[in-house]
Length: 226
Image (cartoon, rainbow, N blue to C red; front, side, top):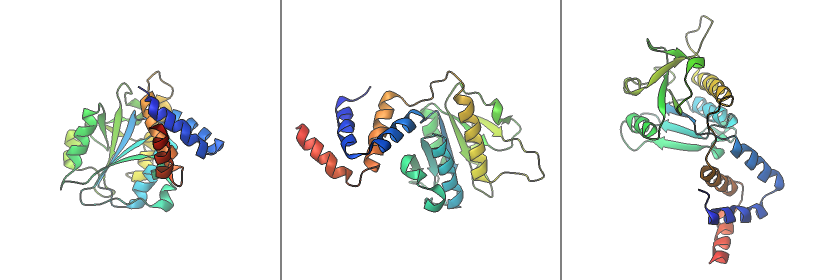
């Protein structure tokens, strides 16, 4: 449900934004989805994880889940090209092992969690069913996903390859998976877009990030609304 006070605040903030920025936010928010999300487990090369963020943002995927066990993640701005600013990044780093916490949260939120790796029960990316929201899980560059992640997976997916090399770089793998699923999803009748309330919440967040002094402007609005 759309909140009337938030709607009024959004309308007020439009006075401080260019028409081009308003139009761009409106267009992009209609193309955003949470039906697909990405979980990155313990990535130690920041450029790879940052490249995943950039691809996700370009394809309209809003949420990225980052598990930081041994390795912490810092966005590489030269690689991400500002993508992190427009994404919702969920970090799991409060415990020695955060993987299960992240996966179970995703499952509680209604996602099927799919490990991207060769497996005896694997299917090809084009055969993944889209009847339920999907969280694709990617592991470290050298060893892949942890055993506990594999044990919790609802399914396994493989990207077809036709050369001698055994695997894609993680950022390339993620981009191929996201592009394939987003393209297919947009051709279905699945309601992949954000709800009205989610769009409203995200629009307010993006408006704030587009202003130099958002807190001062919002405080002024709040004082006028009392």
